[in-house]
Image 1 (cartoon, chains in turn red, green):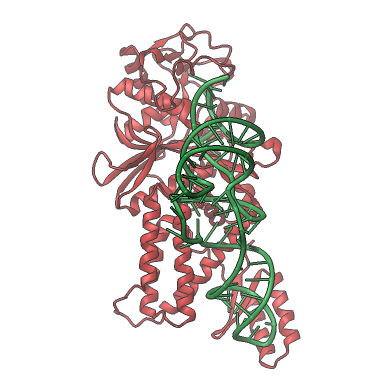
Image 2: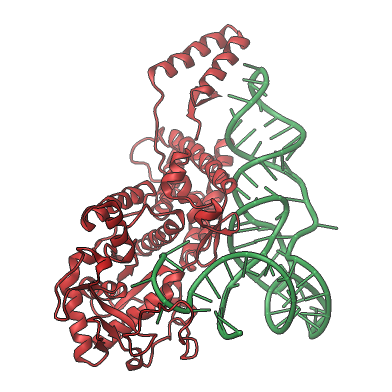
Length: 470
RNA sequence: GGCGCGAUGGCCGAGUGGCUAGGCAGAGGUCUGCAAAACCUCGUACACCGGUUCAAUUCCGGUUCGCGCCUCCA
């Protein structure tokens, strides 16, 4: 089997065949750092993280670039509103973004280029486009891309010239453009930009939004690379414009495969501040949910379908992970008894589930099926342990399968919290009470531990303390 | 107006022209001092209306509802 992905460009499933065998170069549209990212944003970043991990799982070397948009209308507006420098303003949200990625166990990309660090590259690209006749300078000092000069425009989004007719959303003040559909490569400075400006051959101004992705992908990945991803809302105009700029400048195909992640909705409704169903990652963490739980929920659905975020589902994610944790711990206990140097025969059910997992992720990242394979291991493993049919050596082998799987999922490692001395002492007190059959006292201590956030399990090997989630 | 996606049991969510998704929640049981965990058992789900077919949740058409894009929202 080989990794198959759904290519937005062809609208079909294709076997991923990188330009350079064994290595996938891919570009992912990153955040505009003007506020804290919300869970809808993170759905896309988790999708990209799963993709990255699946690529590695399938044996590819990965070079991933994620851009940081740190200059645009919103960042400028935000900086001015707070009366701080653009750089200072965006730095706060860059830091927050990286902290959030860590919370969600998203593996770092190889490069996180920021737009403001690549102004010269962008200016060079605009010069190339001007020289090749794909761009023109308007009366206001801005430079626009001439869509009429690029016949393939609209191919990705499947929009024809009719569909590109100016609609209500085209800004009224874009009179300077030859064609209303043309988009800005370089925006001339105006008063609303405050002190945000860079010098250019066309006078002071700033880059258009789409330009950074073309300039930076070219710099870090070359004129043609394998894979480009983003949210479905970026498909048009952003990605369409990237293609136009890059292919017009380089005269060769920009990207071989495009993948787009569908949106997240909350309680079946579009997430919006006015509906009161808008959540940043930080909002959920404040409510007591862990990054791992949120990751589970966001990772559990097909990336091409809209995902319905509900707190019931988040609670279910919590319970599912508790079940997984219970099993990995049982497995570790059993594996701990292994005599050193024993070869490990893998039970049949684990081999099958491991293969099912691989087949699932290779099928365009079918994470629901992949998780089903994980739960097959948990279920069959628990049964084998109950029936004393899993040797320590086999337990080690199963751990190996889980480790492989978790290379993709990044869900199984727990954020372990050890009970403190007081909690430990209570547990021992309860044991003493139990030995003398003082059940009322024993239950009272159990309730007290519960209030402290600890659940107790009496096992044949003695009592165990479990952190109660939330 | 144009283009596109979707509707699966209480919840989240795979999938398939006939054969169990999975998880969570719920019910009963085993185990346990009681629990917890685990295991065992348990659900005539495929929006609606037509059509194709021996057979449709799956294919086709329509209806209703939801979501998205149509120039700077992941």
